[in-house]
Image (tube, rainbow, N blue to C red):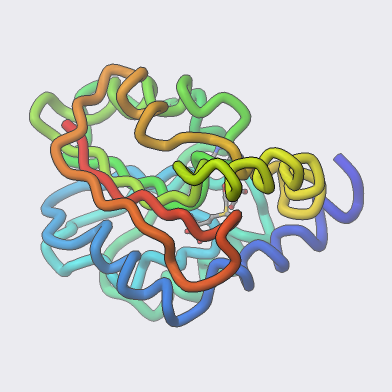
Length: 202
Ligand SMILES: C[S@@+](CC[C@H](N)C(=O)[O-])C[C@H]1O[C@@H](n2cnc3c(N)ncnc32)[C@H](O)[C@@H]1O
């Protein structure tokens, strides 16, 4: 791993994930969750302020030590207990059927094998439990999608492996989850980065 990716990219990515306009999206994705949650690609803990108090604990998976340090500062200001457990969302050292819900935000774009990660979450969430996702992804508009394909290689280098051309809902449907609610639209900003999907699955 190069120096940029190891030491600088986490700061760049955490800053890009911080605009106040994302608050409404983050709030929607964790709204009315209850009980225990596993969140993979926890990053700097940007979802923490939006978790409802009905969440009793969060198990966080995050490979970047810089991100984990940023998250620790945010965890210290919140009441919900958070514990870090492992470094790879594709291979969880967690028991099966143990969690009430799983959350992923803006990380399915980066995790090398997103299908494997989604199947792991299927394994660790109890029957009847939920998956909540917020991601940017491939636009349904051909002209925007063309730009996404053109920019994808640069994006991966600059943004720590992030892909612009993944389709979150297709990935979720192919991994054993059934989508129960989906909300897709452009968020304000440059279209190749801003076609968002917020979904719930069981
Ligand atoms: C764009 S950031 C999103 C962070 C946070 N979820 C948010 O919404 O701000 C993507 C995160 O995925 C993490 N990541 C990369 N590979 C991963 C893996 N294999 N398992 C879990 N997380 C991973 C990165 O370290 C980074 O923190």
